[in-house]
Image (cartoon, rainbow, N blue to C red; front, side):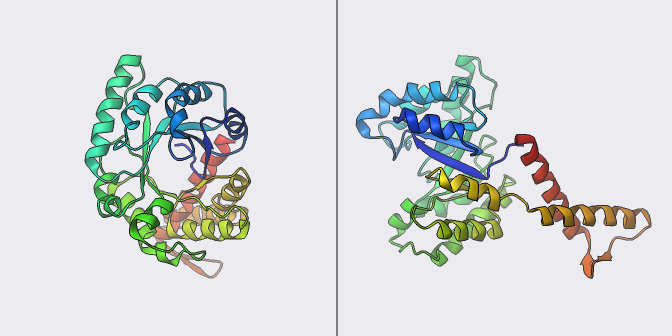
Amino acid sequence: MAVYRSLLFAPGNHPRRVEKALALDADVVILDLEDACPIAAKKATRAVVVAACQRPRKNLGYIRVNATTTEFGYGDIVAVVQKGVDGIILPKVEAADEIRAVDWVIANLEREHGLTAGACDVIPIVETGRGMANIRAIAAAGPRVKRIAFGAGDFTLDMNIEWSRTETELLAYRSECVLASRAAGIEAPLDTVWVNLRDAEGFRSSTRHVKGLGFQGKMCIHPDQVAMANEILTPSAAEVEWSRKVVLAFEAAEAAGSASIQLDGKFIDYPIVYRARRVLEAIEHIARRG
């Protein structure tokens, strides 16, 4: 199981920014062929981002291709499904059939290049009203989709919603991302970027909020956001200590024939124990990545 707390975008056509991003502590670096890459440079940048992913690095390396509805989408996928690329970020997904079509293309490329079948991960970004209406089918579209992402920038534009600092207008849609992921049996989703780079406290508040909603990670557009996302989305020392106490106390209670106990004045039963085990599993994966 990989760790997806922080996912840092870097424009694929800027070698220095790509190099810097890959040297940071982001769990995932997303080299961008879409919004951050000018039209004139898109085709030439395909080979550049693949080469960057093939160099030694400590992060997972993904490439955001252009949407399948554009003139660049298919060519991007054909060019970047190569050894060393961990997966693709697929923007503006609106239907499960898009995922199935992309999966078919990738599966053939994997065979052609001698890659492990299913090795190339696909993370669809839901960022339109139509995509949100079909999000449950998108999340369940196939085994290559292990997690989905929410893109608020294009989504609020498409829906004519004012994206406020408090983000209260996004609550229903974020909750639908979490519910769709759970219903499909995939990992918790990844949250949208925070675009106001001068408002670090806003980023902090947004990240804490989505952690509480059930998201596992935050997409980042500036290196300064990475450490904050990692810190917030990592279980705290107090959470880990409490979780260990819960698991140990409950195991002792189970051995004595009890399935509900009190610990430090709190009622503990199976749901609480399962949450504690999830925290311990998460911190184990994070420690392994470090």
